[in-house]
Amino acid sequence: MTVHLEGIEDFSNLQNENKEKLIVIDFFAKWCGPCKRIATAYEELQTVFPNVVFVKVDVDVAEDLTKKFKVRLFRSMNPLKTQMKTNLMHKWKNIFYW
Image 1 (cartoon, rainbow, N blue to C red):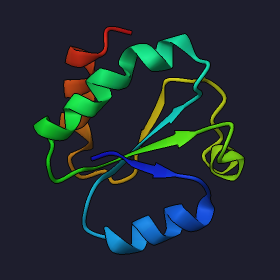
Image 2: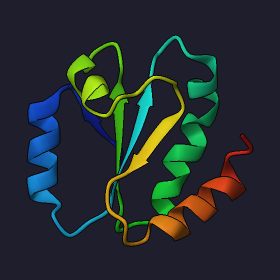
Image 3: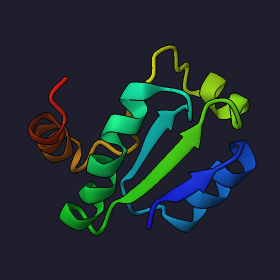
Image 4: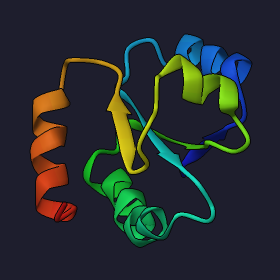
């Protein structure tokens, strides 16, 4: 199940609870067409990587997190741990045809 964060406090709690796991954040907006198109594929990544924490952040709700990660474009996904990052990025290229 994807975790939805509403602010920095939620993010801090999530990090503390998942210190050894890779956390991937999908920054999106409800009105963003490309964000809607990749939502299903993003959800499917959970079955491919069950030990990864997948998070969604609505940029209109969690403006503090959007600023913290300097999100300027949508379809921004940020892996927060370097371990497993290469494998995950390769899998994204196969799922998301940017």
